[in-house]
Image 1 (cartoon, rainbow, N blue to C red):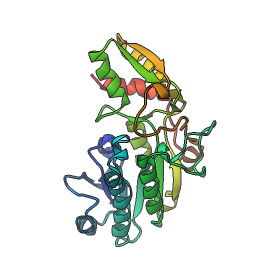
Image 2: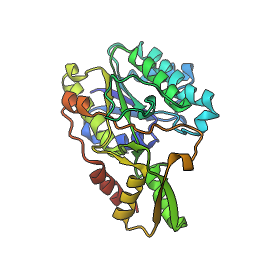
Image 3: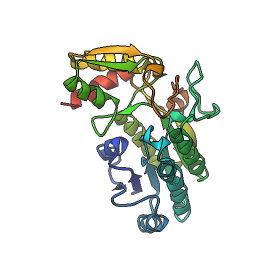
Length: 289
């Protein structure tokens, strides 16, 4: 039996992992969020880690308010960077412990024209991106760490683009959505399943835990406008969606113009099959009333 600690358990990804714990029967899960354990409090974190002694820690905790981070940089760095350093320091007291840490496409500048590979040079353009990159550096200082960068995460839980479009469809007849930012939507349920598969392989054979940086999103790419159009089509929404440029829709934090991630490494290393973003969106929408 392995002890598996999941932080940020009330977020989109954390909740999907909770719903999939039966994938790893016979193991002991501990789900925490800031209410139970504040990752920025070193003493509290050390106490919890020393009590649980997790063989695996899945860090889903993050400050993800991308625009607010521009004004609240101290909070963003505290959760996205300092908290990761605290986790690493605590895990040093648990020999053989393994970390799975979630990061973001915002570590890139968005100037690529082809999917970003894991070894592409990061150049974050926002406080959020810079704080997450610093968190990656801390995470990778732990001997056994897998960092998974993901993009455009959504689910039936919490706040995300899909739920925003559905809400706006109930309030408005017409909306504007940017069409010059290209990326890959990621259903949190698919990412959670991939993480559980990685752990399942590792629990069976520790050599299967191959440390390093990996990228995960759903297959394919689209603009936010195309993403919104697909939501409209699948839910048969009575809503006019207008394509606009990012210049017409200014926001405090700069977004990557292109942040499609190469998925080859994670697919080959862990033999993971990844659905298309359209198929996964359809499945998610069926779970949202």
